[in-house]
Image 1 (cartoon, each protein chain N blue to C red):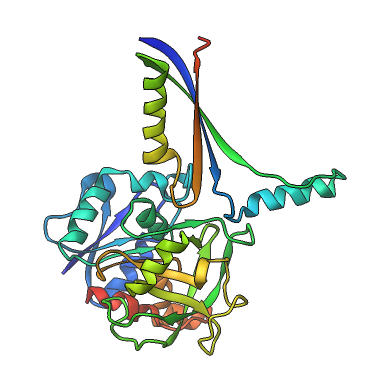
Image 2 (tube, rainbow over the protein chains, first blue to last red):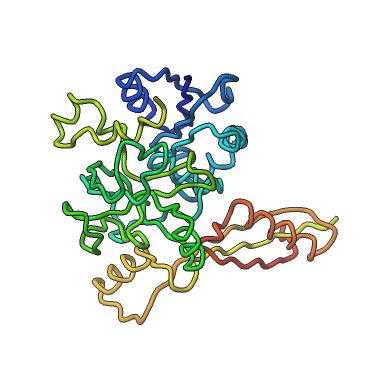
Length: 229
Length: 85
């Protein structure tokens, strides 16, 4: 499997994603967005960073770049697509997934460890977990507050397309455990297919054992990236 | 064709939290100003040529729909004026 890790001007988690996938023995390459997806692409990661300097809105510019039309086609053919942090913002801005990620309730950039409850374990990104499992991943964002209209949220829930919600260490979904004011504590959602997901936390930063040991995170991210194995 | 300047104003929908506006309001209050509320908006001034003011507005609508606004969180309005250029 060749996984394309898209690089835009301002992407900065592309190499982290490749290191994490290398660790999992997943064949992955960083692809400059203007070069388009490789013909044999079997997975796409849209990594974190600050594409186009977050001009207009985080992810707005990259979402309208030609390569995202290719990503949409790949997604429709069943190729797993994962947007992480800025990649999540790009995914929602491009319409791959519903809702929007906007300014944190705190109006600050937040870099911390959070706990997430697995809401749907029947996806490639959560296959190693059970529903209601609590995992730990780091966040690092200023615009991660998930917003969605009430009726669209109801649809999302009824279709079981909420992937992760911010929770406390015991799995309780509380306002205190919501780092950024996201609606319904939502940290990650699915597209129209369960093989398309976006999330604000960084699984690639909680995959390598040596990094995990150094920064206090575990390796739960490896379970999310197992979608590409 | 006539030269127009269309103005697209993009603001958060009513009820959507605006932490930047809240922070700005708090800063003004710290400076001693007395205010009851503050809303912020993005304003784009676009120079273009079109057959009519309506045609200019239609193009600005499409720009807002496709890029300038995010329909999940934003409302927008378009005004058209003869260009001063």
